[in-house]
Length: 446
Image 1 (spheres, rainbow, N blue to C red):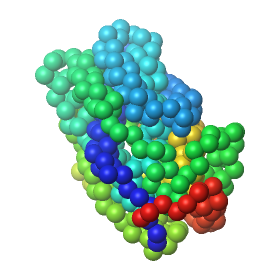
Image 2: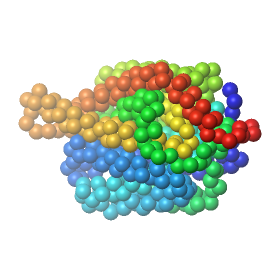
Image 3: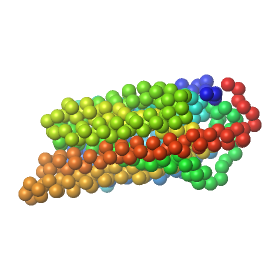
Image 4: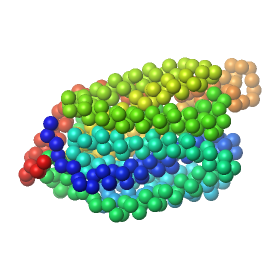
């Protein structure tokens, strides 16, 4: 399979992108880790916990559309640099919150800042690396997700204990973000389409969103993203509370156990998964997506079985759920590169912004909201079934555990959507390549 050209500074720039992505997810994880002391201090319901996550997600998705379009026409490094400064500052402001509403306002600010990052970063990776190396590059970039979560889950509990307050981690989280932001202003940004086999047309495209949605494979990728993010945001929002309520672990141990489930697994899932996905893509144009389908189907079964275990089987639960979560990371290294394969360079940041808007608005936002709602309802049902008249932490534990059974269902829907994407992907990828050949003036040197 022919390969395009890799930028000389590709790995240096990818390192900066990875570090920013790491603290992107670190900052997102802090509220989920300290949510139980916040819930108790302000008397919140699980639905309100879901609202905190959903508000961030909705703002992130909506702001991502114009910021993604801006990344297709403006300086991507400046967009990412200023965005990182903005979200780091609002993360620190979370420590000044005195109520549910004030804390909600700071998370909205973080959402706006972080919305600037992913579309520009994905577009930049597409211009740094040729198609046959993008899964590996995307795997390294997305290592920021598990490592950011891992760093947060392994350190935030200790920060809370050391400073005696849930507010301390928010201030500490700001500092590395400001340092990394400076690095963005110093990188050399490649020309759009620089890694393609042919010179990409640089003329702006009219009706870019309509053009993106005209690609059939994008619809299946979007559906898979909605279902995957529903599951991921539900787990990220409620796994620490589940460990504390249902399995009876203290905050620091609950956070570390969650770090193993969502963080350690990602180290293997993204590094090994990126390599395997690229090999599968070299053997078959459908290979990468078929790998994603099989992985997500097994992930659904593993997480479903883990949630069928009792409260005295915490070790087995962590092991089984970790296996499922490791396999769900195949979604990132199989689906994200597929966007690059079916969308031409001039539309890639817009395509990622549209993709993110859908998967966050309809998946990431609804995951915590729906799970939070059913957690409250299930807790009330458990209370009534026991003949009690007062809500207790025991009933809240049962309610949250039952509500999280929506996670394996969502992973199964993700698997089916990926399978359907394999039917349209070859034709759409071929159309993209042929379009570049028509627009290109000359084939680039290898």
